[in-house]
Length: 65
Image (cartoon, rainbow, N blue to C red; front, top):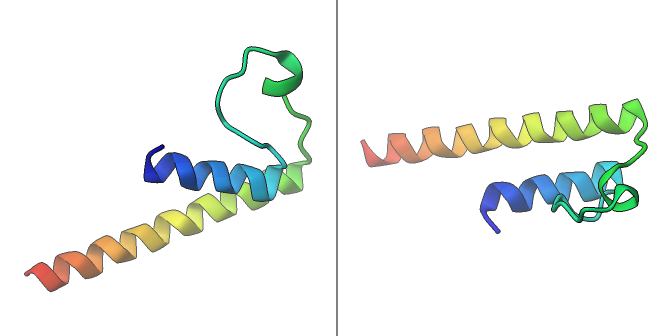
């Protein structure tokens, strides 16, 4: 699993109560009822993770210059 896939899975597990993001070809496993505040929390976590990754890249680029 890639770093991104791992991160997205962790966010889904923590904020949405979704065990895996893999398609399992079963409606009861692939479709979930999720509260809007949980979706908001998951989106916020993904946004913050993106900011953090951008900071890491910027810091790495400065160190390599």
